[in-house]
Image (tube, rainbow, N blue to C red):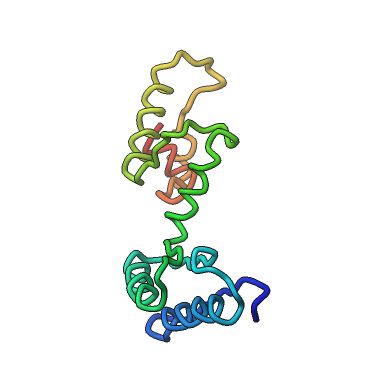
Length: 143
């Protein structure tokens, strides 16, 4: 199986790291790839470190090992101008995202509105449907 990518799905503790290491060794030794032509992606930094450690003992040069998130971020950075992004863009944490939303709502509240555009939540609140996980709940909490 030298001609295509391999995806390994398995539960924790089932040997995915071992399979990825063996696959990388196979690709280099049996299929003629160079170690820097092999990419191993995983979900956790812990798995990345374990893969790097095991692969370092098998090869003199490094196999590329990364988390999906870190590798995709590097890819987006590499093509940032083509995507219309600044090359030094930053990612926001969930807390930062919420702060930006709250700030936008505060600015929205300060804007003069037409009566028909009013962000009035009273209709939702009177109906008793203003749950926290609904648009009505969002309206009640932020508008």
